[in-house]
Structures are given as C-alpha cells and as structure tokens.
Amino acid sequence: MITVDWGTTSFRAFRLRGAEVIGRYAGPHGILQVPPGSFASTLRAAIAPWLADGETRVLMSGMVGSRQGWQEAPYLPCPAGAAELAAGLVAVPFEGARVLLAPGLSIGGEVPEVMRGEEVQIVGALAQMGQDAVACLPGSHSKWARIAGGRIEGFTTHLTGEAFAALRDHTILGRLIQPGAAPDPDAFARGVARSADPGGLLHHLFGVRTLGLFGRLADAESYLSGLLIGHEVRAAAPSGPVYLIGAPTLCALYARAIRQCGGSSILVGEDAAAQGLAIIAEHAPWT
Image 1 (tube, one colour):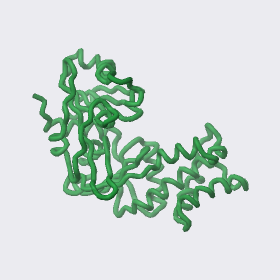
Image 2: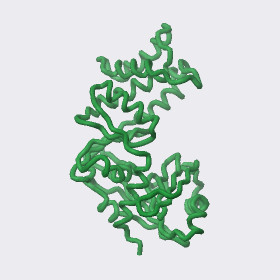
Image 3: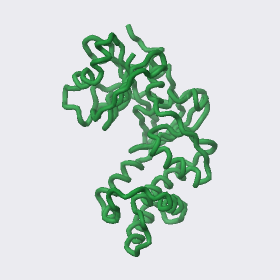
Image 4: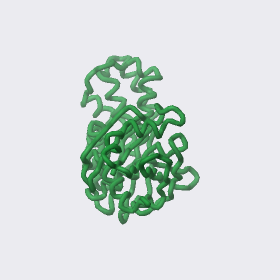
C-alpha cells in the first residue's frame, strides 16, 4: 500500500508492507505548487515506480483533501478516531489504483477549530501515547490536541509558525536578524522567559526592537522564536507530559520551551503520518 502526507508546501509518500515503511519519497509538490487539474499527474509521477511494481491502493491525508486541494474531504466533528476517519474517506478518480482522501476534523462553536493532516499523525502516535494524552504538533499552525479513549476529543490551534515567518520577513523586526546566523540557545531561553512577563504578546514584540536598538540582543531570530513559542506553551497550559509530533528540530525547540515553562514532553517518531494512515487503511472501503 502507498500512503501520502500531502500538505500546503510539502509532499511525502511512503510505501508500506503492513505497518512497516519499505520505501520513501519526498518532493516540493505541496498543493500550492500543483497547477489546476494536475493533482493526478503529480501523484502518478511521484509514485510511478511503486505503481509499476503492483501497488493499487493509495491513502492520502493533509491539505490535498481541502477545498484548495484535489477534492474536498469534508471535516468530521470531534470526538473522532481511526474508525470515524475511515468512514469519512473520499475516493478520487485515478487510473490503475484506488485512491482515497482522509477527512479533517473540526470543532463547532462561536469560533470553530479545524485540523487537516494532524489527526492522522495523532492516530499513528497512539501506540506510543496511549489512549489518554495531550499532543502538540508544532508548525505554521500548531495544534494542541486532547486524546481521550483513543479518540481526538478536542484541540486548539496557534498561528505561531506563520506569525514568526511574517514578523521575521515583513516587519521592522526582520532588520535585526542576521541571515545565516547559528541559533542561539541563550537568546531562545530569554524569549521564553520574557513570555511570562506582564504586558502581553504585542508589547513583548516591540521589545524585540528596543532590545536590538540598545545592543542588548545578540540573536533576534532565536529570541523572537522563544518569545512566540513561550506564549503558545503558556496559553496551552498543558498538565502532565506533552507528546510532541513533528520535525525533530522544531520539536526540540518546543521541548526546551515546555521544560522551561515547568512541564515535560516526549518526542514521537517522524513516521506518525504513515503509521496513522496504515491504521485507517485497515478500515478503508477498498472495494
């Protein structure tokens, strides 16, 4: 079987034998890079050797199932787990193979919450996390999810990664950043510590500029990262250990921030998406 984690800017495919990953492919084929009407051809080009070798089942998750993607797989309400996600799979036309899209999850209310792709990673990490846990998936839109009875009960989203990129690249704070500079752990820790002070995030952000003006900030980029992640961690206010799912480098920053804020964390393996899709595939309508 082939599983695909297809996001806004990234494309990762895995060939599985049972739950074992026996092949990998990654490329710059995020949905924003795919021309209209070219999702099927992009997928075929990426997994052609596996198709030629006889694979006929493909299960995909992520933004490829959004309104901006190949075809929308509607959000499912929480709580939900592997069985609900399998029941919500959507088929797309693809010659020579059965291709299914996993749905995302949502929470209603006055201000809704949505996730697409992270739910599959959580399902894949359950074997390590257990049936009741708190998971954090750092990224452009970081998710903090509550798992109860092996199902995703609820979650919150924090625009941390996208805000960091926007502040770094499109505000006056970017003039303080030295391109290519090595990350400074001490500056990151100072940013995390600052997030505990009164005044709020907007006030703290202006302080990045004034610290730089007075020569009291060696690495503005690391400090800004620590400040934003610190505010996120304190807002999420987790109790008990937090399971971190995602890229090791970014998860390592979150682990440091969580520890500095008085919590603890456990890193989950990088193949959570592939493992989650393998679990969902067991319940999938392949015929």
